[in-house]
Length: 223
Ligand SMILES: NC(=O)c1ccc[n+]([C@@H]2O[C@H](COP(=O)([O-])OP(=O)(O)OC[C@H]3O[C@@H](n4cnc5c(N)ncnc54)[C@H](OP(=O)(O)O)[C@@H]3O)[C@@H](O)[C@H]2O)c1
Image 1 (cartoon, protein in one colour):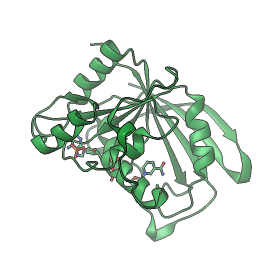
Image 2 (cartoon, rainbow, N blue to C red; image 1 turned 30 degrees about the horizontal axis):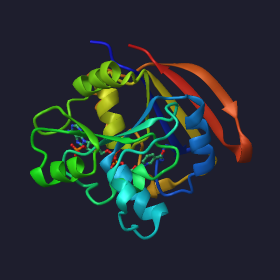
Image 3 (cartoon, rainbow, N blue to C red; image 1 turned 135 degrees about the horizontal axis):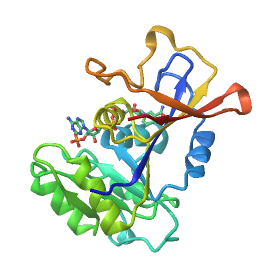
């Protein structure tokens, strides 16, 4: 079953935390842009946290929020995983972002009618896969064959990253390391990985020194 190449991209402290330090957002997304992904895969917690931290007040929906935007076809889709409808009332903020081609939502057989109505009324594409949570393998296959998506950048936290890595779906890991230690406040990016069965071996692709003491590490995941 063909699926897109998947790159996980995160900003971390030197001690591996993904929160509790100032992420250099400009550099984070500048590097994300280098991968020229056809889609960004984003978890619902990440969307909610991003809007809470950086979004300010939630703007009212207007007429244009109910139609698909006409944007440069080279822009990436935002694929949002949300089987529980956590992003209900928030998706117009994502759609209005100028660097987003449009939003596609991954839902499951347990997603509420209310959320599906919300998506239909606003002309959002969605894929129904999986019983409780999304079936990522199936969804990625459809994204590849129906939407022509060849490269996906995962812009998410430890839950979704851990799940995708655990299922052998991640091809590359891109870490922007900040010169800061978070110590006991640290939330480890890959804390949700279950290593009991087998370690995940990696091959270093590049190690690049950047502004302000930051380092970009890129690894290939070996299978
Ligand atoms: N430093 C960085 O680079 C960086 C980048 C992105 C985000 N973040 C931070 O990461 C935090 C959010 O991370 P998070 O890990 O809590 O959330 P997340 O990455 O947004 O992942 C949550 C997603 O995982 C899915 N999921 C949960 N359990 C599942 C299962 N058993 N099977 C399949 N899918 C499942 C959920 O889908 P359902 O809809 O099915 O529940 C949900 O959409 C925020 O604080 C954000 O600011 C940091």
